Image (tube, rainbow, N blue to C red; front, side, top):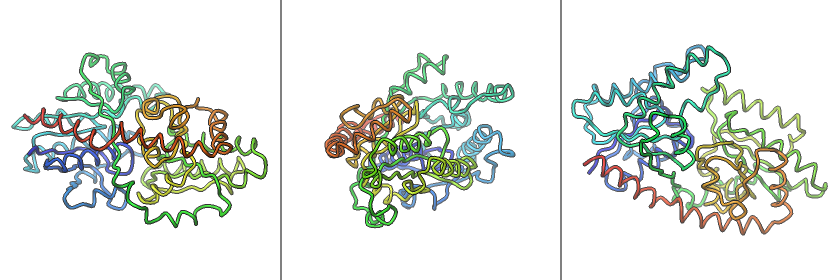
Length: 405
């Protein structure tokens, strides 16, 4: 029985966290001993599986700052994860065979200090250095050593996995010294059991929307500017202008996603989006939800006409997969992970990242109601074939067996 420890910076609510939880659960069901170690864990702001006593979550180092006066977030994240790794190796007394870490590779050299060398599997969601802008010389100077450290430490892992073919290509382009390192693709899976359970909040969904709602579009993403959530609002505004008055009354948009009061950007961007909705005169046809529960999220997906997935060059994106499993078509930007998850014209539409392109796709669902049913059924079949828990579990367990030998 392999003993696996997961190291993750912040066990909140997001695509990376979803993958870590699914990976831990998958290995636990295969008989592995599993623990999750993190620098931050809030039981009220996490996925429900972490409440399972058979899936231990160990939180250390949360007293360390996440930023200094609102700056140096990356440096603080690196220091927090290095502390977690030091605690695990030197103070915990825990016996383990494989370390699964993601997002922050700076902890890998510390893991090498273990008296009995353990194997390290690093899962690359996307190179961290590509997730931040360098508009000033000072920012470039600050990021230079961090970027160098990311590349150097990533290469120290015994095995590197990525979440899509798109990310595999970006990995080779970004980490030049690692261009010949083998990176296998492990697509994130979907915990279908969660979605198969009848939602306890489905009936409560009616109270969230105007009674005359006949066509609901859903944007499901964290409140971060890089997710380009404003595109959904702008597309809705154009759609409303193009529809006759009789059809406008039934159109509604729900913007829902992860929200954390500790994250300044979440707080600011939530306000920015509400202001944009007012500027576009959409106040009565948009509902904003912060950190919806798992059951409410399922109810939203099941009740939506289509999901609007607005990020560009998203490394994978689990939301389109979740939507398709719920028989909900997806309108997504034609770049990044959705190119691999969404079948254009079959399970949804891949569009240019413009409000005009998104509004045209939305208009088709309004005027051709059968598309929701036909594309929804095709999407569910695609997820079952390509992103099943069984396929994910078999592939991941195979890697763990290789590393633990």
